[in-house]
Amino acid sequence: MGFYDLTAVLVTLAAFFSYVNYRSIRLPTTIGLMAMSLAMSLGLLLLGGTGLLPIEDQVAHLLGRMNFHDTLMHGMLSFLLFAGAQHVNFSDLLSRKWIISLLATGGVVVSTVLVGGLTWLTLHFFGLDLPLIYCLLFGALISPTDPIAVLGIMKKAGAPKDLETTMAGESLFNDGMGVVVFLAMLSVLHEGGAPDMKEIGKLLVVEAGGGLLFGTALGYLCYQMLKRVDKYQVEVLITLATVVGGYRLAELIHVSAPLAIVAAGLLVGNHGRHFGMSPLTRRHLDSFWELIDEVLNAVLFVLIGLEVLILPHDMRYIAATLVMIPLVLLARYLSVAAGVKALQARLHFRRGTIRILTWGGLRGGISVALALSLPAGSERNALVTITYGIMAFSILVQGLTIGRMVSRFVGEVNDEQEDIEDDNSGEPLEAH
Image (cartoon, rainbow, N blue to C red; front, side, top):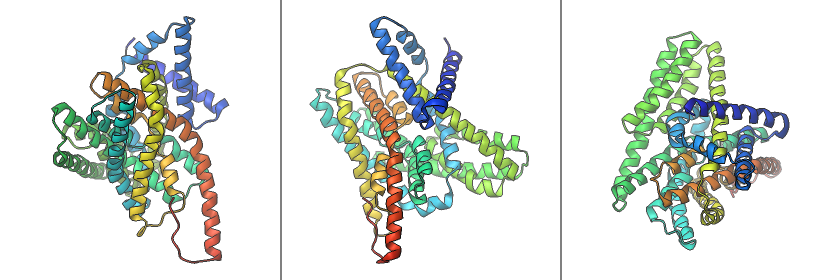
């Protein structure tokens, strides 16, 4: 079976699971699709183990023909980031720029170091003595959040705008920052020397800063072209070329392609939308990118659910995963708390912000894709399994419970506002 056959299988499964989820299960789309795909994968493994339906090897072989890392990092990611960035209000983003910047940069670095150290200790306890550089690589790939599902849940639960903006902005930028940190660590691994923090810092500045500058220029060029055309078919094609061509060009000039697409998407989705498009174009452009976003997310989460068929089955890896799940959450909590506390004197945070940002920081396909890009070997097998387990927990458990937490948070916010009206003491609200 070739690439087209695999694509046909994935799209068909995504459509069927979406139908079943919409008609019967009623979970958030991405969560429902992944849950059903994971259940099907586990079912195939069990049936294959009993000899009743020995087709898991054929399915695993089929999935093995697709390079998950290339499919996501050099294919889907550019479209998903652009679609997400288009719908973030730039004015809202600027109002939370300090906390978003701190969480997407310092927060990622702090989480990388904390997770790396905790991973080294945990794996050493289970007799899996991975070099520290691999543990830091795991910290870098697991630190970025990818709340594709949780943002929809937060909107449905009526989360305050400032909290929703903080989570959306952080997820857009820390994806790119996490990839940059991961690639910096990976270069150290390939060179075989000790980490040179000065060189790593220089690479981070060049990759991240260069990506943002290139993306801004790319978005401005796209805006100028959109302003001179009044035919929505051509304008949709221009945005499509901006994403595909811009992402590849950023890779060729060695700047952060994810950050470049985020910057371009923000500029086109805000300045370009208001000054370069007619109402008809805005409607068609929104419909096009919303459809792209929905279809790719559906296929991506089906693919993630099926990936369990090709994971190495080692009980030590599974035991380590169960221990690492709360430790990764702890590292997330500490990195978020550090950022919030550092800015609490100059920026207003509602009570419960740290908890919601921690629990709502879901891990997604980017983490799995980065893990699969590691050099083949026992280290890669261990980290891929742990990454998958943490990602599955975050999507299925955190994703299904964050709505309840946000609803309770909204109730607390309303109670606070009533208290403030009754007693306007002017004291700041706690962010715990």
